[in-house]
Every structure is written in structure tokens, then in C-alpha cells.
Image 1 (cartoon, rainbow, N blue to C red):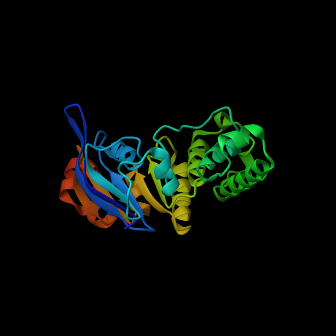
Image 2: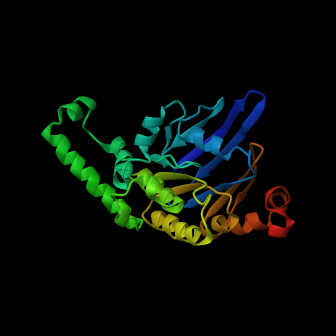
Image 3: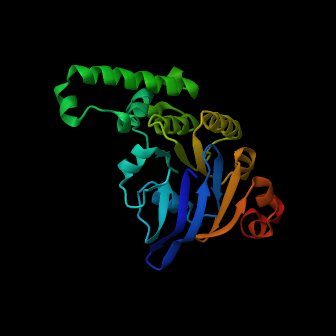
Length: 253
């Protein structure tokens, strides 16, 4: 298994936000995590990426125990993420935003960069070329020199995905990437996520758009008030009575 989570717990005061969660993610699949607001989905992402530490339990990535590691160490091992709210540098160009995501793979240190040594020029050029390649793959090459704040919300979402891809992840965590998108943008997003999967990158997806989830996911994990409610293939989750009653609702089912 690429990612293995064992008996994970996280409290916020008296709130048991993640309650004894265990699940795994096989390499090369799209696994979706769904559940109502407050179910613990983003908290789970924060625990996986090291933004938060669990009160108990363990997280393994490629058989490495990553639970105690800091965020940058986890990113260096091959885990990248996006956020519910886009976190772009609004007055930097699109290309520069993507280049920032590449820093985890650079060799030049702080002093070398300050001194502007020759090998840092070569590395900077390589970072830019790689960033442009990613932008082309997401059909964003035409706005590489645009400031990020000038883009539509949908394109800003894609730039954030591009920045996460710049770190060359083996596991990409997407936190509600379709939030705020229209139908056309969501359909395009689905195509892009499948393209990313076809490049060999495993995806863990938190999303409220059930049509998107059921259309592209290989497996679905359902959270409710911090606990696992169900897990299985999309078609099985759609028929699960507990999921229907708790999350999907009779009409949606």
C-alpha cells in the first residue's frame, strides 16, 4: 500500500474530530473521502501532510512511518496537496507560483541563492522549464506571465494543482478542488484529475460534488463525525443505506 493509516485520533478540546480512523490507499488509484461538513475530512488531510499531529495512531507512506515528521520532510518523500481555499501568491505570475512548488526538489541553498552562483542560474532555468511543462499539460501555458489574481477562479484552482504537481508527488491530496466551479469547469477538472492519475500519480480526493466523486473515483471512503461510515467502490457506496441516510439523502440516492 502506498498510504496506510492506522487507528488515527485527533481531538480539539472535547471534539473528537478524527475518531479511530484506519484505511489504506493503493498505488495508482483515485480514492475519494466524502462526508458532511464537520466530518473530519480536512483534519485528516492536515494529519497526513504533517500540518497537524495526531493524538494517537500512525501514518505510513511507502512503509515509512511519517507520523512524527515535519511538513517539508513529508513533502520531500512524495506527498503534495491543495487547499479548500486557494493559497496562491496573487501578485506573482502563474509560472512563478508553480516554480515555488518546485523548491522542495532544488539543491541550491539559501547562501548559494543570495550569492547568485552560476549553478543556481542553471537550476532556475530547469525549474522554469519544468513549470512550463506542467502548465502546458493543464492547458495553462497561455497565462504563464499573468499575475495569479487576474485569472478566473477556475484557472486559479488549476494553478494550485500545477504547483502541487511541481513537487513531483507520488501521492496528491486534493481538498475540494471543485468548490466554486461551474459545470463546465468541473467537467474539465474531472478530465485533468484522470490525466494526472494516468501519469502514475495516486490521488486522495476530498470533494462534496458527488457526481464528480462517483464519476472518477476507484474507491470511496465515507466519514461521519470523525468516524468511518463506509468504504468501497463507488457503486457500492451509492447503494449503502447508512450513507444514503446520513449523507446522500433519499432524493440524491
